[in-house]
Length: 522
Image (cartoon, rainbow, N blue to C red; front, side):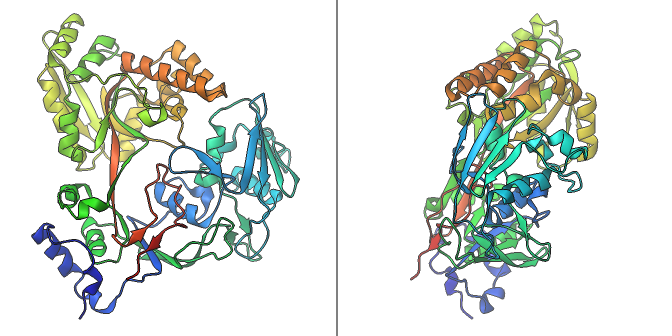
């Protein structure tokens, strides 16, 4: 028996009992397995729902699609867009015509050169109602989509392949965030082989998929952006936290998101802590307030419940301090760091506002949530803190479908939710949540005609400096009007093998293709 695979890993100061439990779990498997120095080992909590990017509506599927396929443009480490299949692009003065110059050295995995007509075919396939994709909203604003989907034409005239290396998209009206849509998983460029199977141009080629087990890939030596350094990529499917940690410690995983209950164990170890990366996520956690009826139709009550909560204490209790205080819906990273001051913990100010609103004797409200057990720690802390200022909260738990339906119908006084970016633009945290037409139908019932005009300006303005000012203004309005209790923007902690080289976390979940990742060989 040999356990030398773990000998290079720091563990001398690691929590002894925790390490022993993990070690015993994999004691027998390590007798017969040796980590491969030319293979990158990753982990997912469950199978991807599909390998077809048209159905990439979840993070897992998007992560796998990113290594199989490419887009016209893609995300860099942050929110920036960088060339991919398109080596350059431009937008005309109207903000409606997008022009792309394609690389000439891109080929599908069967050796077929990629041409502009492949891009058109892939985009039309996504928009074909027979495909039944839930991502048709990506191109709903393209000229001719309505006629194509109604069957009046057999092509979308807004997609044009002028020649083999030139592609353009014509929108019906300006929509500034549109270029970011083209980097999303569902906008991947695919083709079909002679048997009708989907092909991509990505850096990795799938060779095996054992459902609920693993996905195995070999590198694409002909990849246009340079073949991956490592020869193989393996993505394990491990739903449970303890086996994931065990596999990581013994060397069979190279990158692992640290399970929340284990964070302090890893972070407090002086050697392991060197290999932890913290990443600010593009999300926001919040308590939605029903603004259509008392008590939250009064802005003073909405502000009062914001002042009533000690958010840093909750972040420390549930996230080990990993998170940024929210001062509005838009994450600071999308506002160049320009955000209002968070409300802060001010119980006296909260009581004062409640008295002014006529609730000097307190009030009773319901807070709705899903059934996930970990949510109770959050909502019970909120319940206890609100009780201190006379806001008495009854917590209502329902399964996700019932909970979501109740929110859409406007039943809860308050509800706990989060919102994660579909694309890295402040508009994605404004229009889908606070546009009056949307809010009245499915969220907080908050309406603000001035804000509606501001959001429209954000969607149509193409000057990025002006867009930033518009987004900052919108975020300030929502801070002041407080249709939510603003909680936090979360951070994710990821730990990597000491042997791993060339990897840093990316902000967008589908940005990483693992082509420049290597391993130290001893």
